[in-house]
Image 1 (cartoon, one colour):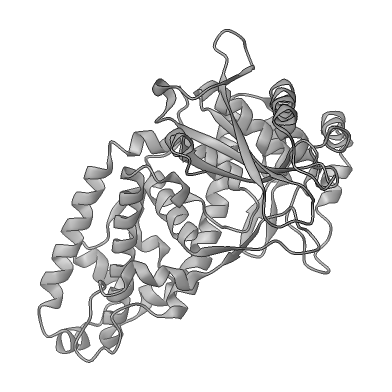
Image 2 (cartoon, rainbow, N blue to C red):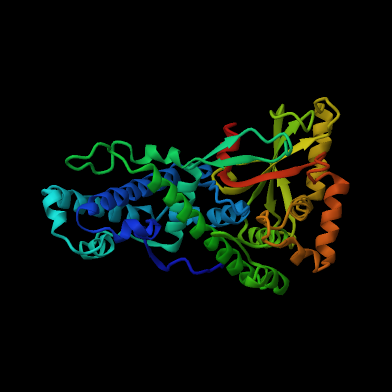
Length: 414
């Protein structure tokens, strides 16, 4: 069984900006309002989990590691679905205590308090304790809400264009967070939401790296352990990342062991330059229990309907200016089935392995080029040759990876 450190005790306040935690006296009520917001965000997180809306955990972090978080969610979501009651009890208790505290004359009460908000949380036992994974789910939910998907740039029409939009978080606390006498607003400030997003992105980036390193150790692959180690970890401002090809290799290996299905979801375009896809197809793959390191393409059946899956979404474009016929799509499915999971590894090799560095920040891609890794170079060539690359997307170019349930595909939501 895959066992990694998930029981480490964390606290809800860990997501609060430093200035929230260090306020005193009359400013404590602003900090309390911001903490109250996080409580409602945790409630929303639990609700999304209970409703099976796993696409609500499709976080925009900015580290190009959506595949890592997708694997972790696929692994932990079924377990935490049965454990949400304990978190709900803690949240209800914290809300009750806040109501008791704020039923007094807050201005007079807080002016007398010399301690910081962090000390105030500790003394009043208001800080909700969470496991490492529960905090992870909260951060992915927050960063999923705080984004918008815009049309692709003309220069890179095949790539997704996800943008940060922390103003969208306002709805979580609107009309719910504690309003005190004299307050003009019944919500948190826009600047607080921006700081919350920035802190969540930084923590989630580091958490993602730690998780994939744990998984490389779990499958006991020396090469993956080396390539996912801190030796090949690169920092960009507050984000960190590992080389993409080897993270995908780790994810595929773990998905096989954990029996996590993978869905290839393809959007078809007649031309690369077209923004809207004409139609789409998907293929479900499950680990073949009769064969080691093998995947089977199957139809969705009742017994797998509620399973959490890794969705690899991409685009197919022959650039011939016409739609594929039914027969051509059948041939496409056969080609995907025959080349799976090579299409994922080839797509990962074709992609930049790290974030784009800032001017003067060096070239981390040189780390990979200097390796002269034969397997990596093979898959990179295969991507262009067989149609898994941005330059040649004729078979399948990966755009995004996210978690979901098979039932959403059966309902036709995707």
